[in-house]
Length: 481
Image (cartoon, rainbow, N blue to C red; front, side, top):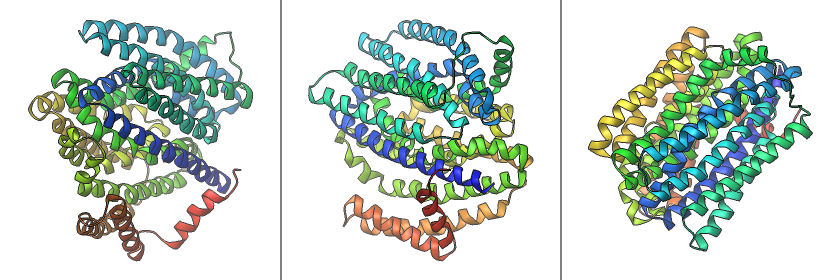
């Protein structure tokens, strides 16, 4: 058991570091293109990405999760599972691309928007197969190579995208930068499968295994469809109901909260295979691991959420004056950050414990609430209405998820509540510090001072201990086993 725990910590360390670096590069790039584009143009660019991202899920349909889980259980069958997954994905890719092209032409968007969608669809196809290849690596409990790819991908996007901006090329060349990075990731991940993991893609189709994978995938697929619609449909609805400018303003808030999701993503990427293993072999350890994940994410997410709410007016100064209307939506959407973070381990645990149908039902209910609220609130409040919807629907999904988790495992609820209380007290001191300093210091020094205040108070009231710091240090320092 200690070896597996060490691997989880090491994988989390690798992936967390890579995602931090990737998100820093990504968000820096986003700031630069937002400062170079008007909200309307930014809206066109991200509408195309959001539109194709929704269709991308119909290519994967949750197969990546199935591959990770099944290969984690049966490593000797990795080649069979991958070959069958690819046999399913190829026709789905053709159907999804065809549906995308037909729909965008029926919706009556101008030529530039349609061309952006076509270019983004190239990324859609390549990224979907890259996801499949990296799912195999995750099933083998390795995130090191995926971590490298995450950083290199963003470097390619930024380098080519900034070159396009410098040369004053139009939006299509920004989208070509994404396509080039997607092509690199596809080739890189495919080479890993062939040369590093020695997983062969078999030409003979195993129809029995395909049937089994489809049966397992159905609840995962429905969940993935609901999740993708839940994340990106708001931008599409904003475009239809309010226009490109509102999409551009919304992207400020959306990109900030999306960039911060690297932490729960890193946790669950390495925890998911472990959850599946613990569910089969050691349910006491499953409960302990779940408690720790929830506690760590509370400690991390609560100060980030409160801090951005307090400093939203300063943060928006990073962008053009035309984005000033995004301050209120940013503050509203940041109220959902804690629940977004906590929904990651909740959903991961439900999937790992063969409760995919429950997870899917919860996501479906949250999606329904989101669509209804967006249809009513966007025409009235624009971007603020979409942000209110994000906060309400994430809280709703968290409540549903925790109710189900309590019926599956016996974990220490009071421990998690106590951590939340201690973090909240520390956040109160942090916010006072930020509000006192934000008019006298620049935003960087204000954030540093407020963060130190939070950590000091949390340490002295027992939110974390010296042993936790040593454990984290050792996780980074040890060599991979």
